[in-house]
Length: 359
Ligand SMILES: [Zn+2]
Picture (spheres, rainbow, N blue to C red):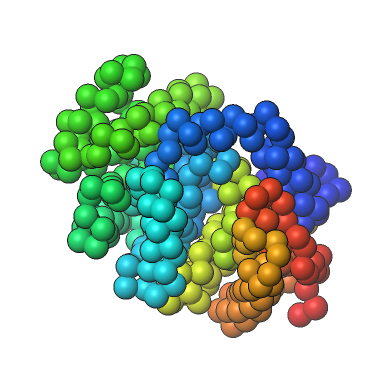
């Protein structure tokens, strides 16, 4: 059951409370200075392309503070640089990094579960080989467009039972971080140089903390003897848009980014998965499901914030239409929250809030 929401609190109240807490942590002077120091010491901009699946939380899995890893989410972790919105988003991210004299690292990820095929990726019909082929081709597309000197792209599996990263070397060798015993910086540097002989030297020291963080995280998961049901889907939030890193909890939200030309299909799949969570009793019918539509902005003055508002409101309407047409059984359980996110503080501004839908 959805034990994480205290009794008497609705899902929306819980989300707003969680945002308040995580935004306060983000803005706390000590934390903010620590993050800036970390960024100064590890300047590589790191992007993670991943599935909408709520079990994939790269920051938690690598013990990385909020605001270091930049996520892009879609069904299956499928992306294509030919998609207009995705192309624009990646291009402006790369420009931003290069103008600041930074390298970019992009992790192209797929996911599976070592214990059971059916805990794998719905976006690839649980076919991990197909997901590997797809992400391999996507990595090649990035290499064709950006080369490997400034923007470095690597293919990476995420195994959700141990929450381990599987590095795919450019020589075809695969290394599961759950099998790595020597966690010293020297050992990890030599692992990286074996797997990725052409990785720019500037990026290497910025990858090491992610690997060390993942190894620590795996040890924690293994020692907790987590029951299998906890490794299954338990999401009760359907996030549409961008700016969700403040959620910072594994297995709470399925997140669909606004990049896919077939956005309706991605939203319908997410709604179907959440419906399954309800039907199989993995989440509570009382708390219900929250459709959370979100758009971030950096500049509080001028049109950027207002454009974000329009985007979030549009996404909410769009997602509600898709769910109404394709997964109408979910509508009676649906609550809706429409927000913008101030990128500087990670605080939400609530635009609309519907505890119970009018349908
Ligand atoms: Zn998936």
